[in-house]
Image (cartoon, rainbow, N blue to C red):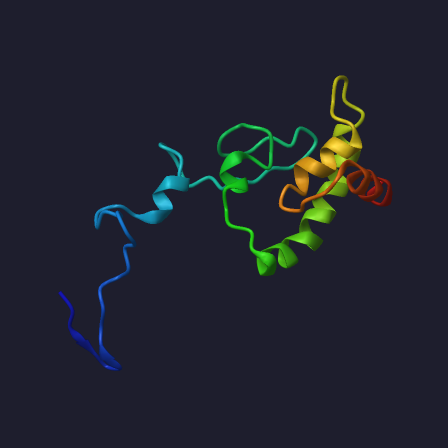
Length: 123
């Protein structure tokens, strides 16, 4: 039901197609017990705080990355990738810098040669 507010008619919140009125959209990112946990990580292991998988995890990778979003991600993820290269390349059986660049800059279509150049620049 809608009612009139001080600035005109109020509308019910948008639920999107197939979304139940009882479901809070943020609930899919919350852990089952305790406070909400974001899909973030930090070195030296670079595993997701929420799901425990290699970070960036599939949940983070599933977020839409159009051209405008990629432009905002590049500076931050370049800084993170530099730290990840330092943390991960020295681990026994760890990934090489090219694999790290491809993992952390998943939203960019990089060839192996381009990823190698980025890795050399970020080292």
